[in-house]
Image 1 (cartoon, rainbow, N blue to C red):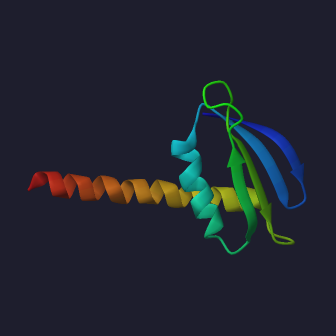
Image 2 (image 1 turned 180 degrees about the vertical axis):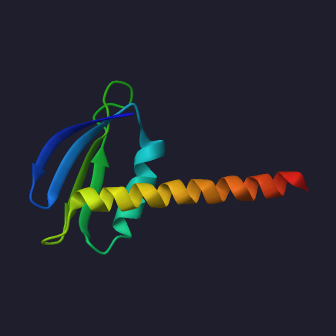
Length: 93
């Protein structure tokens, strides 16, 4: 995965996520929507086979969109760890 910063102005960040698709972007967007500091979180893919997702995050005044993205990705990481543990437990039976 590679990130390309497209726009950074105050509480707005727009970036391109190279090497990922809906599978990664949807859970990150969902986690951002659960963050009270986030006003808007969205992504778009112009062409499913040729384009990389563009992510847009806007936070409330004096709140960092960077830290909102970090929190969202950490939550996704924790969710994946929890799922892995539950799968291991279920498959041992």
